[in-house]
Amino acid sequence: MPLAAYKLIHTKPRSATMNISKLIERVLNILTAPQTEWPAIAGEATTVPDLYKSYIAIIAVIPAVADFIKGSLIGYGAFGFAVRTPLFSGLVLLAVSYLLWLAMVYVLALIIDALAPTFGGQKNQIQALKTVAYSLAAGWIASIGQLVPWLGLPIILAGSAYSIYLLSLGLPVTMKCPPEKAVGYTAVSVICAILLSAVIIGVGSGFTYTRTGLPLGGAGAGDTATAFDQNTWLGKMEAAGKQMEAAQKSGNADAQGKAAGAMVSAALGGGDQVEALAPDQLKPFVPETLDGLKRADFSAQRNSAMGMQISQAQATYSDGAGRSLHLDISDMGSMKGLASLAGWAGVGNERVTDHGYDKFYKQGGRLVHEQWDNQSGSGEFGVVVGERFSVKVSGSAASIDTLKTAVAGLNLAGLEALKDQGVKKD
Image (cartoon, rainbow, N blue to C red; front, side):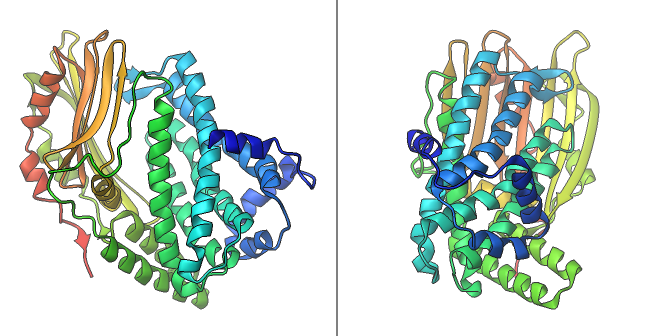
C-alpha cells in the first residue's frame, strides 16, 4: 500500500496543485468554519493525485516529523530519565511512518466509500478521500502538542476529538448520507481509523526492531471478556449525534460546544460519559515506599478538553545513592473506551532488539506492557486495571521482575474497585 500511495503522489496531475497559501487558508477554514467549508470542498473538482500533491502529502509530514523530534531529539521520560530512539533509526521510522500515513488515508477512504450505501450515502472515492484528508487535519496538527511539556496530552486529545467532530459534519455533505445516519457512519469510521493507526504503529516500529507483530482478535483468547459493547457504543453515539444536530439548529454556540463534547465523550468512552477521578483520589494509591525506596516527590493533576478528562498521579522513589524508580498512575477517564476496544480487538505488539525487548499483550483480562534494556539495566512494567486505570513503574532495576513485583505490591484491587466511579450511564 505505501507503493500505491507513492504512485498516486507521483502521477501527473490534471490540474494545478494548491500552493502553500491556499493550503493554509483551507486548513484554517476547515478548522474554524467547517459548516461552510465542507460544501465548498464537496463542490471542488479534483483528482486523487491532485489531493495528494496539493494537500495530503504536505500536511501528513507534520505527525511524522513531530514523532521524530519527540522520539529521537527530545526523548520520552520524566524527572531526568529519558529514552531516545537512535538518530538513524528515528530517520528511518520517520520516512516509513510518513509513507504509512499516506497509505492509511487512502485505505480509510476506500473503507468509507465502501460503507456509504450501508448508511444511505453515495459511493464516490474522490469525495471519500476528501472526507478523510480534511477531517484528519485537526489531529495531525495537534500532534505537535507532544513537544509541549505537560500540555501535550490535552492538545493531542483535543485535536483527535475535533477530527471526529469534523468527520461527523463532513460525511453528510461529501458522501450524501442522511444526517440521522451520520453518527453511526462516523462511529464505524472511527473504529476503522483506530485499528488502522494501530497497524501503522506496529508496522512502522518493525523497521527499527528485529521483530514486530500486531495480531488482531487472538491475543485475548481465554481472558476475561471485555466490557466493550458495540451496540451500546453506537446507541450512545447516535443519541449524542441527535443532541449535536439540535444544537446546530438552535444556533447556540454554547450548546454546540457541549454537544460536540458529548459526542467525543461517547465515542472515546465506549458509550459512557466518564468524569476522571480527582487528583486527591489517586494519592492514596501512591505509597510512601516502593521496592524499599522512599518517595522523593509527588504530583497529581486532572486535564480536560472537548468533553474528555484524564487524571494522572506521579511519584519518584530514590535511595539517595543513584537508584530510582518512577510511578505513574493514570485514570484514562473519557478515554476508557479505547482501552476496552483494544482488549476487545485483542491488540498485541512485540519488538526485540539486540539488547532488550518491548511488548504489549493481554494477560488475565488485563492489558500489559513491559519493556527492558539490558545495556542500561532499566525498563518499564505497566498494566491497565479495570479497563480504565494505567499503572506503570519505570527505572533502573536488577531485572524486569523487580518492576513487576513493584507493580504487584500496589493496591491494584482497590483501584480497580473504582472503575465505575464517575461513569454516567443513561
